[in-house]
Image 1: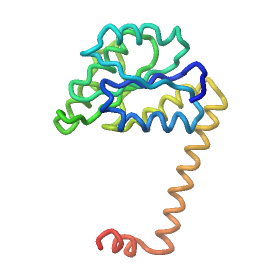
Image 2: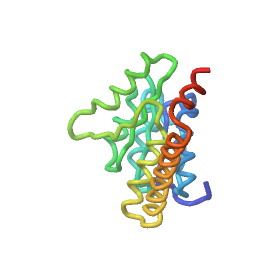
Image 3: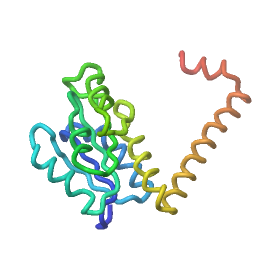
Length: 177
């Protein structure tokens, strides 16, 4: 991203989460939203986490996307330290129980400390949600979100037409061979 003030912080508990969190970076790049991406571990660098979350708003950020695997404390701890919206991305890590530990750790936040939670490994959706939050107050970004959703609709309608034309049986035969 160009050297402008980041509006979104993408943080992850470990660099091993980067493959998953790349989706958020890619979608924010598509929407021309400046962001920063870094590692902030709730367990291994707790003071860094406190500093990051406590200062994000003063640095001009509008949203934080926090990805974490395993016990996944990062999104909730960050949310407890900032008034910014935090979007949690549960990451299926190597020590994970099919990712459910991460999902539930982020999803089951106590009342008063909300964390928006996307599906397992769904950082692209976290990026879209962050863009939507920014787009609610920034018309050019909001217009890009509208265009993006209209393009999704067009893709689906093309598939509808293709199924009408070619029939679903032909598509089923291709996937089973």
